[in-house]
Every structure is written in structure tokens, then in C-alpha cells.
Length: 155
Image (cartoon, rainbow, N blue to C red; front, side, top):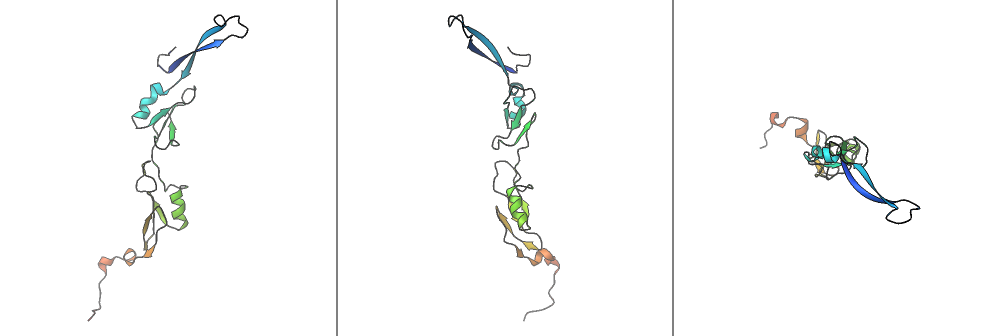
């Protein structure tokens, strides 16, 4: 049957009773209910562009997961579907930090992959997408070029 929330899906299974004389008299019909909380709570996930999953019959274990990254999921509420490839422990962070460069992920949407950049720290300048930047000294990074005056003339 269904409860007042419509959470149960019902299946009808035929089982055999051992030692029964005939198939007709030895069979019985059993109603089995499986709890699917996504029936009630699925709108929470779908309104955030995510998918609801409920993989067991336990109560309160449904979760929303990001459609393109199944490993990002949160129980009972929408997940934060971002992928910061420069977060501590991520590949981009490791590559840049090893060279003492800053890692920046300009687009943390889960669909934007491999767009992280290593950026050189001042007074050096340089940027490279998905790799170590070639850092060069830039005098304008170390001083304000707009305030420099030349006292020499070149005749």
C-alpha cells in the first residue's frame, strides 16, 4: 500500500510454499513496499537542476547529486555543484603551489574543466592555463610606471 505521503512503491511478487501439492495451492501473493523518498522530495533536487537518488529503504537517506559530477552529492538538500580545481588538494593547486605560483579557477561550474591557471606572484608576471606559468620580471609590477620621469635626454 501507500502511506499518506505517497512514498511507497508497491510490487506484487509470487512466492512458492515448499512442500505444497500443486503450483496453484502452493503459491501465495505477497505485497512488498520499497521506500522511495524521491517521490516526495525529488522536486527539491530538480528545482536546483540536480537529480534525486534514494538507494535504500531507510528513511532520511535521499540525496541530491550534480548531474555531471555524480560524486558531488548532499543528503536532504541541493548540493553545491561547483568544481574549484584550485582548492587545496586538487590537481591545479598542487601544480601551481609546487612552483610557488597562485592557482586561480576562473569558472567553478562543474562543466568547466581544466580551465585553472597558474599565475606568477609580483614582481613577476605570467599566466598559463592548466600548467606552470613562465614567470618574467616586470618592472611595472614592482613600481608605478606612470609616476616615473626620465631626467635624461637621448640626443
